[in-house]
Length: 384
Image (tube, rainbow, N blue to C red; front, side, top):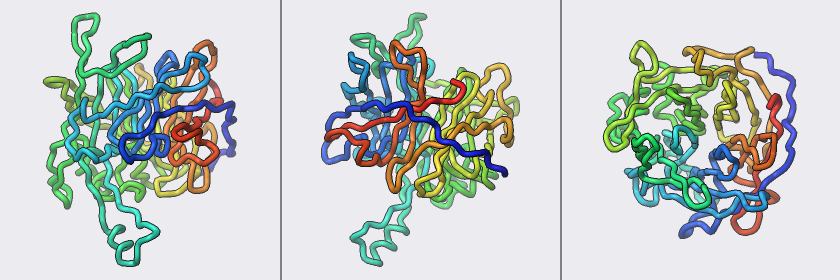
């Protein structure tokens, strides 16, 4: 594969995100931001940390200079998470569509990281231990209601103007995986793909080791794309396309996405050997934030998957590269910090131009503001 000439996207500014103090002894959300999505009017940001089971809401200040007024929303209250109270959901994707905030967990396993203070036996023990936590297999949606000041709030259910109801709901997290060595409780999505010829061998492999790992979501009118950090197959990143149907009390079930009755469709994209960290619709295209599958700092790049979000010509399952997947530019990354994890298009009120807003996991010291705040970057996107 011939790599295009590399260029760094121009950073045109930064904007502060002011969070409140964390609950209990936890770290501030700024330490582990994994995804972000902006409202259409640019006044609300929804964010998540991959170390919690909450979503975070920030509101643009009256001056339009920063986001604050932090509200923390526990997902257990809205979606009935099955894991322990202190168990994270490893949220890696957020989307706004159809009056809902959509939430996707990683659906991954996790290997424990050795600590500096561990002796040899303890370090080996931690590397042997692979965690399977039920909350990580979350895929659901929560309806949005308008609150005071016309700011979007989350609700259990919302009555629409047509008399219908939008209800909070999620895919089942109670499917036994007979194809897996560990017959553990996972999700309906895992059940659908665990015997797949491409995905099956990676369902027992932890995240950051090329295991199955959801990072990024795009919700269209009748289709949903899930970006995968892994597996990367022979240099090709993976996008999983699904559809959902609503059941009783807002519960969700996988629905067929093709004429053959299959409940998922596979797309493999040539991203220079990188995995997917975030997805975002952009007109008829889908923008991709890509980074290493393994636990490395970089490179980090933005790509455009052309016409992937088109309603008139849905993409068939297959392998995409060349003119279908355009390289747009590199993003900066740190040495052990500043890992770009989430992106959204942000058009601030009064501005005629939207910019790419990027948030980082493990922010560098010069990105932190006060006890709980952090700076997000704004980039100029070619062709926007």
